[in-house]
Length: 333
Image (cartoon, rainbow, N blue to C red; front, side, top):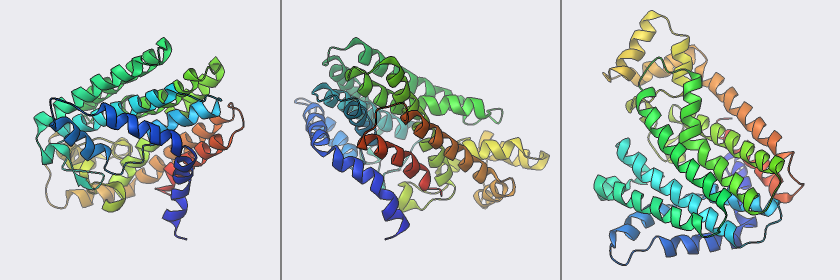
């Protein structure tokens, strides 16, 4: 058995354990992404939703509810809400980033156009709010609506922070908590809330999702400078070409001498990129141990995620979530 196949098992096990509920989530998603009057809406959403994504975020909601003893039905609505918010942000992100590939396939904005991606993303946001109201739980509505605002805030912060060499690790963490971890932590938190979990357990679920999301994003940043295209679903060096100041680069800039800082200023801040610049960037990351340091951070957040789970009741699903935290960082092991 290969390493990749072995490391895939935690996600597969979780998916299998939650298969009946995920079937209900997928059915609800397909029902709610339809549109009687605008056939482009299901065309665009189906392209992304059916693209083979692992549905990790909605599974986190179902998993949290199951650990806390909930047997439905409204965790399904909340999980579908989480997936709609996620899909809407992907549609918008690909427009902002001018991306051409997502999960190894052409992006919606490439196949259709930017207008369709933006407007269908808006539609999915609206659908998500319709869904999150249906459980009739004000606290879950508050959590998910706050997450939607935090995600948008994180994306706007990234617009300025991502191309400014003054961006430090604290600002990076704010961006990551916005654009990635906010939905992970909301997904786990609402699962606990709908199940009637106590405050300490709800906080533990939030902490798990937050730490898992941060680890997930750091790993994604690392893979951009060293992953296989078929593994990451985008081209190696996309973040560099898009002038995104991600964690490995932030660490290299912090340790840079004057000529190196001038290089980073030219390629990131000024956007003046030439042949061979990506190779030089990779060399500087290696010289300063930036990749190894970022990997250590990812492992640290993975450990925090697993520590949070110890405050929850013993459960086979809880063990799978612990394995998931290991799985996330195994991609850069």
